[in-house]
Image 1 (tube, helix red, strand yellow):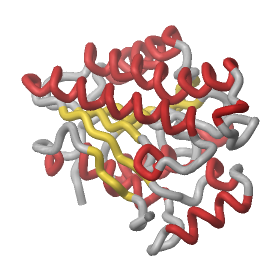
Image 2 (spheres, helix red, strand yellow):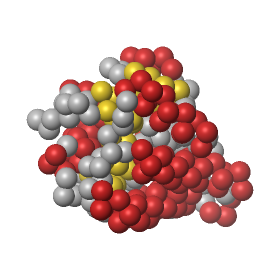
Image 3 (cartoon, one colour):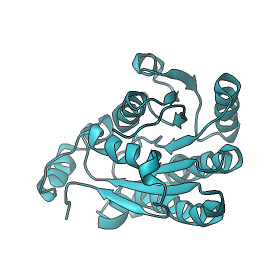
Image 4 (cartoon, one colour):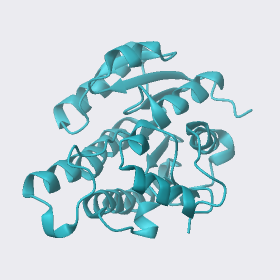
Length: 238
């Protein structure tokens, strides 16, 4: 088991799904974990960790999240960018995307994670870890996913640049690209979309713990020489 003893981790959007699984795995491996949530307070309190409310589309909230974490624990060693949701409008063709829908997606999937990484770059000690949860959608590019794919592609670009900037401090920055995983985000998609992902995935729909295991590897000493990498954890989707 990867040891995270003595480490403090912040996992955004971690009251359920992949984020929750990462929190639980990190805690099992010895880390002190801060659960960040935007609105799911009850679910956040159920996770084995301290919960701090913060909307990661707000720079002020992001800075408060880090400030409160450091005030409580003295340091932050691992940051996982995981926050995200499916827009209430559901999948839409580019021809129908409104300005508001575009701005919402990029605030959530690109702008917010950018400023989370900025705070991490400022506050993590040498040897820290930044793990960004992206999506295999940036590779397979299915129809009706333009703003989601675009926002996550921006996240991957930011991740690569920051990996180069922080290499001299031995801070690693990586992306995990999950495929179709059994989460609320997947269940909120139209059934035909869910069925399509399942049919395209040879190993079947994944579980949040599948992603958590990869995150634990990157967070521990075993991941110290892995940086600027996009790790596919997608059941062989094609």
